[in-house]
Length: 445
Image 1 (tube, rainbow, N blue to C red):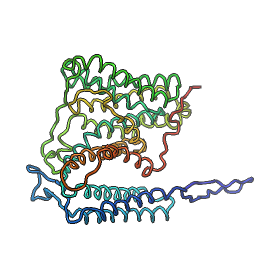
Image 2 (cartoon, rainbow, N blue to C red; image 1 turned 90 degrees about the vertical axis):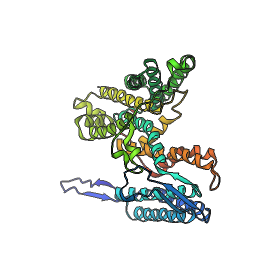
Image 3 (cartoon, rainbow, N blue to C red; image 1 turned 30 degrees about the horizontal axis):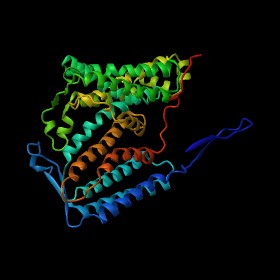
Image 4 (cartoon, rainbow, N blue to C red; image 1 turned 45 degrees about the horizontal axis):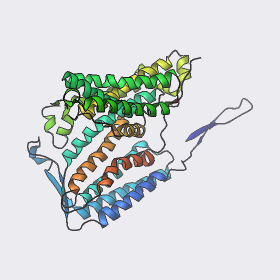
């Protein structure tokens, strides 16, 4: 919807004309969901295995489950269940056709509700089909999702901090890698996992400082700087891994793990209790940072200044906001947050540092930031979405090795998180508007 003022040559009253324009690509989303829904109906439902069942394990023995409100296991017919869920997904797709064809600016809540209904139904149809004659532990799946989401979420939050101030942060991959390296190295040398946790964001600050120096200080093209810093981080960590860590892993690369903190009663809730309330400090920090950053960005003077610098630096400078200093501080703060995500790769999982162990997670985090529309909560939800796809492929890889049911090639399962990322960014988000001055250097007049 756009507005256009009437142009007059006299003192006549100026009226505002509202032009209701529908995007030329409005049909892309419902068409995509329709095609995916038909694929689910045909391949997961009609071509499923008849006469077999799929089981989802929910509650466990010892859970806080009065009167058995949450069943221990839900078993449904594989073929019939997949067909019913596919029909629900197609119904949501029909709703999108109706909503988007009739309204140029539909309510966001209605659009997101239909997308969410479609996504849940489609994923459940796929899972029902793929675990035919087998069982899937839902709590284990969600536990893996949360664990895999932590580095992605911290990386996406790093991107939000940097890009809200107008600095493109392609270097998230390098910040995660250096954070993982620093946490493992310093933690091993000192014998303390807590000192390693402090060292991880401090080590990642080196990448952030170089990004700010070249992008903000010397006005170098920011995407190129980010790519170069990623290569630099990979080269430096690989060099020290091969020459120092590998030679004496007991001294420089000992696996350390952060302890878990269990919250009584809440951790006994079926399905989600252990997932949410029996975690290490990094998971709790993730929730705190997401909430705190959301409030800081949209409810404080600091956040208003950061967003002003990212949207209109000239106007911000005019009212006395130090543009480049704000960008410096946000890039450094963002790199420290990404360093916590790197610590999650080593100290959060209890594994030693490995060469190139970030394995593209920084780029997935960048996609999560875009999918989340540069908002901390949106970035977290997007990170959970990608992590769910990754956790699902790990669980399906385990169940595919069992006899009977559906067997999916391992190469396809490895592709799954990246396919989800591609579809999410291209098909669901649609057009995302970055901060207006994102990537543009600023020279004070």
